[in-house]
Length: 259
Image 1 (cartoon, rainbow, N blue to C red):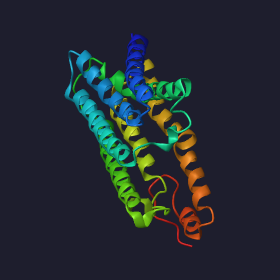
Image 2 (cartoon, rainbow, N blue to C red; image 1 turned 90 degrees about the vertical axis):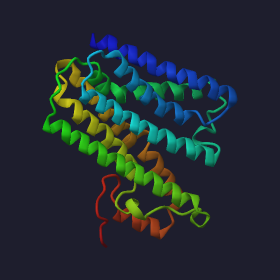
Image 3 (cartoon, rainbow, N blue to C red; image 1 turned 120 degrees about the vertical axis):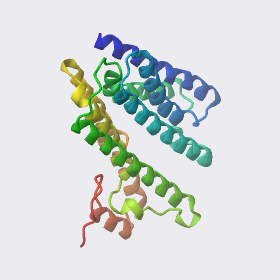
Image 4 (cartoon, rainbow, N blue to C red; image 1 turned 135 degrees about the horizontal axis):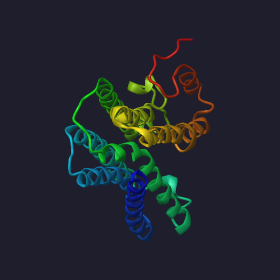
């Protein structure tokens, strides 16, 4: 039963990506790549709600949290791509059916993996009973969403100013972490997992793969390593950046070291 449900949602996630890939490839546009990512979470959450005929308020709250997160992400990324016109990440793969398609395939699998605990939680027949752990998870999610939102806004405003061209951001929330947006992103999904945790049983504990996957992805694959490499290449000879790097936490918000 669990496996059938998860497989069905994997198919849904891949179909959403396929739909957006077709248009993105035909029109060679970057406006649909991030859009398809955020919308996938929203659609899957809505479908999860629709398929459960005995929803509790706790399940509605979790779905609402995902939808709010997705709307924020989609709005920010779509506005950003409209401003910058194109995403340099896709310059080498945009014209390749296999490589560009591979990106959307990986994106679809990633959405599904991240959503596993939420899919399991939304699909349960359960009693309405709020636990301290669930309340803690919801608080973590709220704080993480604020951190991620503030980080994205501050970075976008900084980069939008002409006088900051070629400079790195080290003000605001970025004073306490070199990647506060990624910290917020990880904690959002850990918060939702903790929220659902008291109601997961047996094989459903596989849901931990969701927050573990997004954390692994951002820490070791497509997030922090890529940006750290770019920043080192761009600002490697910049003494201010080297000082910022030596004093500032890589991920977790923490007061800067004093030399």
